[in-house]
Length: 157
Image 1: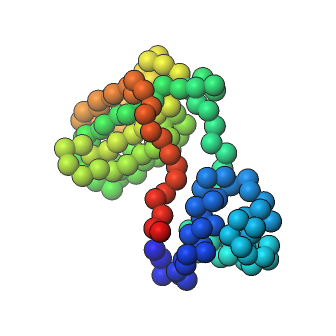
Image 2: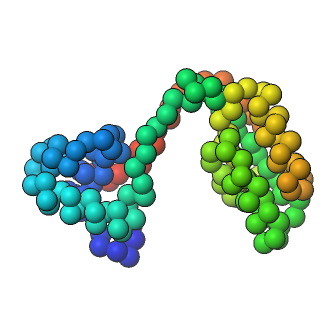
């Protein structure tokens, strides 16, 4: 958790409900956790202020929107300097098809997750990437089937 005020069991109930359905009204949330609207609203505002709730979003259907192909790309860096990483991170930030970006431990330096319409769209992203920064090795794997996907953080209790 953070240095801010810690969360209690009631906060965890609220967080659990919100990560399942952020469209619930304050009234409905309060009813489900046995709090008044005002008390529930104050807790949510504190959870937001303390950074437990980063933002509330709508989760879209990638398949229906024409970008249902998930590609995982591993990258080995050509060098390990602050300037190289800044250039790489800037390049990645400017490619909307890259939806997740991680610095890794182990044999691979970076892992990217892309949502694209197909192999041709992936190749365009690949071309942008290799034009943007020098890379030692790039390898991609196309997901054949999504078996589990959740945005829910496992909460205690």
